Length: 293
Image (cartoon, rainbow, N blue to C red; front, side):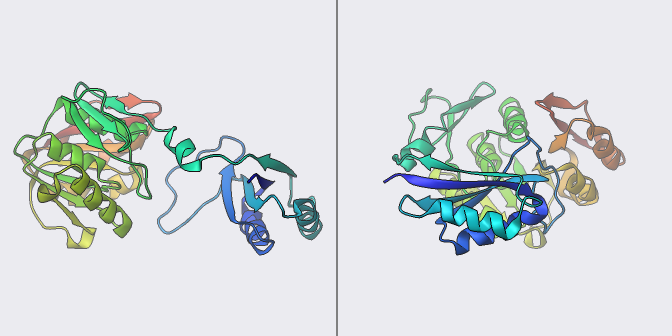
């Protein structure tokens, strides 16, 4: 069965009201997206910011009189709120297959492959990690994750205790375990991320060496390696805590830092870590270094 989409371009402050109007009119789902390539970086904790120019898209069954719905919404909000609007037909298709086709195995470094569960690993002898897209962030497609995976591939944490702080999907925790870590502590403030990490650890047969914790419940220990793929502001705020969690001579890996932010992040760690020059990829940088004794 074909579907119809009502697409309304508006401003951030009006998007929630238009979203609610589409749902009340019978939309099966509503999505919000960026219309002017305006990425959102480092939102404050507990906030859900929108793009200044936001597209609100409502999905309707083909039998719905979408022209009447759009007329009502245009009359309700007016041209000061609605920048432009239109109705598009959306052909039916096997949605699960269409979604899956966007993801394929990806290589990081020399040995690591991240593979969706429905794909055969390109190299059966590689360190193949099976990871499906889900609610928790992290399947390797973002440069911040890629930078960490490439570092792990070049520095396998054999027999080490590793902390993955801000674990998301658990991709770095699983990679560390698959590369020989003896114990991995995965930490995240989001319970959904901890659930995803446990599921991915089970899927990759490393559940016995990965433990998950909320930040306030994480054990006090001195790890051999701590990896934190978060964002620059939290990384600065966590500098003292990370110093307590890494042993003398241990390794720190920081990612989620935009180009231009590396000096501020480095400054927060100067007293306790010797950090090497930043490594950049597509506008993001990674820092790594060793704990001072």
